[in-house]
Length: 114
Picture 1: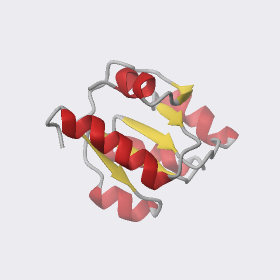
Picture 2: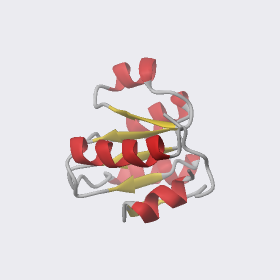
Picture 3: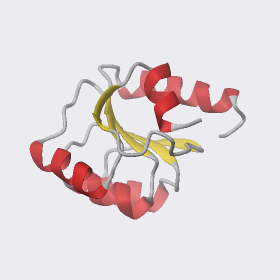
Picture 4: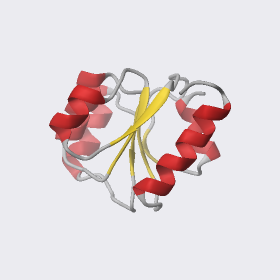
């Protein structure tokens, strides 16, 4: 599944979409950035409520396919600027993290990606 497919399937808000064809191979939900750095995998869809510019740095370090801000969180201006500068796919949803993770998991599991 691609980031663009995920965005459309879950009606995610687009904050920045530099690579809608980027493949997603799994998902990770977490808010403690140091924890995410050690556990998120390349090509994951990362779900978080964190919205500062450090999210872009962690997304780049872990090489996740996209970041999905949950719970109606909006990116702060520095995060949005960094996502645009560095090409980080940044999406959002009003859904709580648990619900969004279930939906992402359902999509990836149905494609035998997880």
